[in-house]
Figure 1 (cartoon, helix red, strand yellow):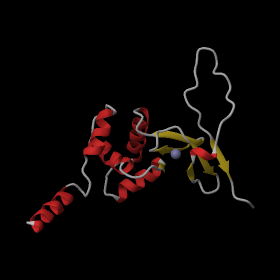
Figure 2 (tube, protein in one colour):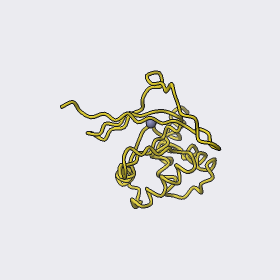
Figure 3 (cartoon, helix red, strand yellow):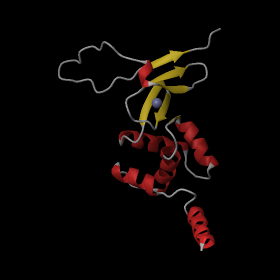
Figure 4 (cartoon, helix red, strand yellow):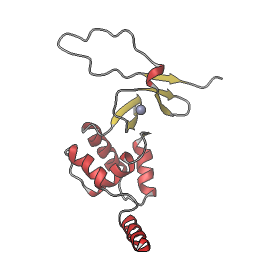
Length: 153
Ligand SMILES: [Zn+2]
């Protein structure tokens, strides 16, 4: 009996690539994005891991390694659609260089200009004491700080 259950579990695992699609399907549904094959595959790569920062090029590479046939342009479009739907947050570190953050809560970053590495700053290690008044007719939506570091030479 136990063996039978184990066999079923293994078959289920193989059929579902180890992880069911229900989680990413639900996320796309909530975001009102049609679950196309490519969106599902990219969402699975992005949203089923711990929080991280990826560039479109990195995700394109990961997709290719995972056997997902998708163009870099489609990866870009999908990342922007996910950002618009609040599934991701875009962190533009310099012109032409953006990271997509799977952690969509308000938080700050350290960007290493030499290595290109982007890390989260733990909440308790940074505080913003003074903010300007928002211009007439507006309110502050969020505050994002990027601390830029470079190697000591
Ligand atoms: Zn982050």
